Length: 436
Image (cartoon, rainbow, N blue to C red):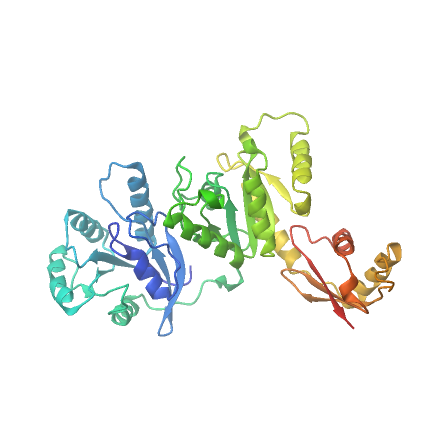
């Protein structure tokens, strides 16, 4: 990555995600009073006084933990430390240092990391005066801040920028990267899919549904630049009980809104459920291009034309989404996983395809000649011309004498004919009407 990497680490519930959000001036990471909310590494680009860097939020570190989840989070944070050019070690100014802080400090000293010690929750002068007890950690003077109040944040950022390595020539520009949101029900294998694709255990994976809570960005290069966004599993709304799940559902919705292409994973063993259809509805209602990925295909007993029959069944169940390409994979074995990105790239190109006005008007004349819109209220509808006004999604504007009289069935006919002529696989298209 072309920008320096700054990792925010510390034990659970010291305010790492609050500090992450404060730096970015927007609520990117989920914040809750209960410890252990952040489980994966969460990346975001940050800028201060003209210096850009990649900020990484991490889960709470618990050295020598017995719980499986704590061990996995610790491993993830270790990975973030090895990636980082600078580490911000966050401690709780109100609680003081304990054996966990000392263990983390020893780990950082052993690794020789460039480290800034940050005493968070120093909400007033009295608490700030007590922060010098953290000198015993052997990591230099603590920088007292309050992420919730914004106290001392500017000073911390000044110190951070001074400690960053000298800027180098950019190795590449991620602004042209295709942003891919990986969405689906809980436990369909979203994190496993990204881990298999990137060839690294970048995301926490357990058999427990709902392990991923944040929408986590993973920059990735494979015959092109991508940003893979792992998201929390979308449950039915009445099943969303906890505050954490409420916010992570919102976060997943925002990830869909901001993506270029959505990879919608379904479980081969479950066929296509009503919740899968709701997720597809959310993707298409946000006019995002999409690829339907059937995961865990290795668990299905194969016969001749199994995939063909499965595809036919999907198309029947998802008649409204018949324009979506379907691919069968196994995140566990890696079967056809790289081909998903080839489909993503193709669908992204389809979303940005333009058709010339002259070509469209020839198409309109032929299409209306085959099936003219029925007269409404005793009046005939006459189409004057058509043009493509937008891409991503492709949007077509047809000018007519009575646009308000065109019914939905005829709009569907025109949309289907556009697809038949020009493709637009995996892409929702819009057909609008205007009075000449």
